View 1 (cartoon, helix red, strand yellow):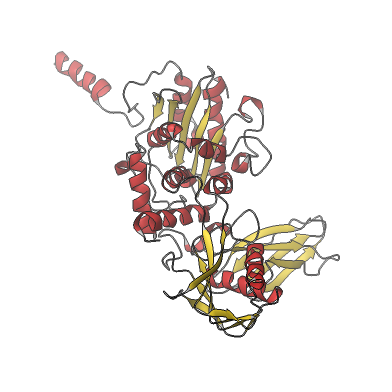
View 2: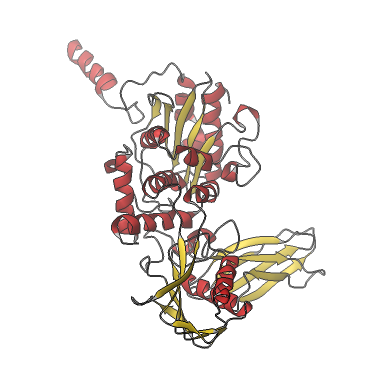
Length: 489
């Protein structure tokens, strides 16, 4: 009987797999003492949640620490790490998006006799000033009027505007903008498919604030229901957009001494938005349109008049990753599908994404990929896979562009610090973390590069799911990296 109890105890203690056990090869624990494991097991803010931490040597790829490292969790915007790597590998750092102007007519008698076509090819950095430049080029070709229609062509991608799991409540948010091959951004943050709303308090209390929409178009109608209040009262502004329209409702209160507030709202029908802006540029530059405007496609027998090319992909990586731009991610997914399979759709793009990631040594068969941005709660990835990706791509020719695109801790410049600009602002962690953040309801993540307490370069991934409070996740990430880098909280 005693022998039976001994073997049963041996089996339970040593043979039963533990949920947070080390998973990949032999993991030396001496570099990361039991403080980190104890913290993850006993922190009351993690009770009822699932956390995973993976740490690798940046020089050898050896897994140094793994806590639930093979547990699939929702990565939030850490999914962008995979999208960025695949896009740089498939498209290349020099890749540019073109916007083209075509005609099925001819230039004669100081005008264009025929239709004018604006063909979008996915450029998420297109601005209204770029339309002005295109209009000026047409004017220089002797075109003072268009005796025909103005047609917007968005057929480079399919007509599915939202990724499969985007919540309806995100539809009007800037990060939930429609994905179209023909789109435009209001400013150089490049939030394509959005408009910017500037709200300035009135000079007197109880009066409505002054609201400006950029770019200025008759396409948008603003219902100003807001009120200017005394400085002792807090701002409580709310901006919404009626579903299926470009009618905006601004309500709530703004304190009289508040500086101008800037908010971004997604547009309904981004293709028509871009086309309307181009029509305005034609008019502003003295080109008269005689026909109508509408959405269609460029005929086979047409002539290319001019085009605009975007910034290089290596440059686009900065606002994409630093500012965690969802639209850029989904555009890149569709663009990869178009380039690799001649189909600008999420299904073709994700398939292209998967094939490229496999070549980069990522075990994608263990992942669930539903989009490129990480907005889906159904995306699943292991922390050990994230650190494996970040180790493998160090050998890529484009790695410098990738690394440069990551937010830098505590640097108060949005195109350097990005989403980490106001985090890790003190101590050894300031300026020493290059990493991608991630946030969804009940999810927080952070993965990237830093140095451990021994001065060795390491790669880390922290995935926190089922949190009660999201802000708890941010503090937990700070605590974890403090333990890793200087063994203190």
